[in-house]
Length: 115
Image (tube, rainbow, N blue to C red; front, side, top):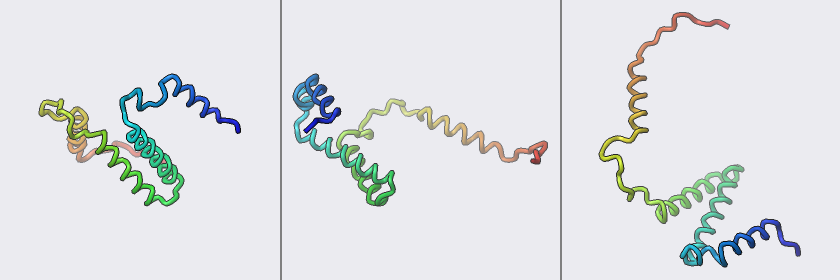
């Protein structure tokens, strides 16, 4: 049986990185397996969602997968506040645009283009 091109590439990558990523990164095999499972779930249900196959089930599976990923590794709520109590720049821009639009209560168009 002939090996695929991607299989040969993976062997080259594994050879360059060592036997397993878990050895090089200090991550246990169970964590590597869970990350691979999560990736597979996201790819499969993302494809199903894009194809319109069971969209509600696929959306739910993606949401659950993302919540699990966020709770496991992306704890943004634990990050330090680097704004020093000041509003962020995107918030300031949004507010400036909002106030500018609120000031435009009535705009007169001097002429109309009829086509």
